[in-house]
Length: 236
Image 1 (spheres, helix red, strand yellow):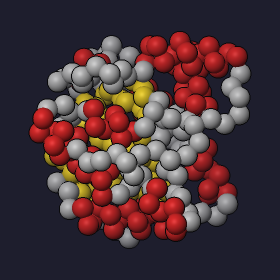
Image 2 (cartoon, rainbow, N blue to C red; image 1 turned 45 degrees about the horizontal axis):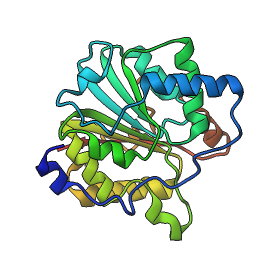
Image 3 (cartoon, rainbow, N blue to C red; image 1 turned 180 degrees about the vertical axis):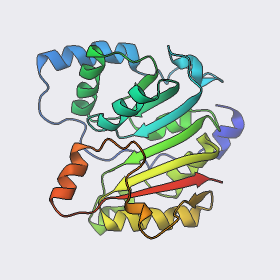
Image 4 (cartoon, rainbow, N blue to C red; image 1 turned 60 degrees about the vertical axis):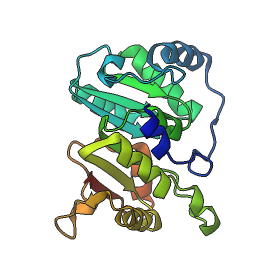
């Protein structure tokens, strides 16, 4: 990170991760997979980020994508497998989700994937400016109570982080089944000014992304009668 980057970097005090980091006790096999997998795939933020992030990956890559809060990893694994020439960084502080991901990677390793198991704001502040082609934030915790809205990950400070690390023309994709969070995100991106919402007709924001594999959480939302929205913003 350059001095200019540090000067523009927002405070992390109120924009970081809120929520559980542990769920059910993971099985012994998962614990082994988690430990060995993190040794292989975890990014070390104590070292300065390389000027060329492509050197972080074993595979030869031509683009870089970040997914924040990948849950069980269904979407991230699908995309990393389908797009071998794209480098993916996945963030997930929830131990059970990371254990599931590391178990899957133990069975089918990927050279174009790295992970981080702590607060995404730390990773965003570590990344060089203009280093990412896209950011996905899919079904984040909606914090439905009004008194908790300030905990929502989408806000002015984190959109500033996104704007810094995305290349001009880079995409920020946001999916949610909670109408209030969808509206919140639309307003936040409009007010920020660095993101242009890509919507061509009245129905396209309810149309899943191309190649979308779906997630277990999304399937549950649909069963319970909630209609997902899929927003795409371009970094101007």
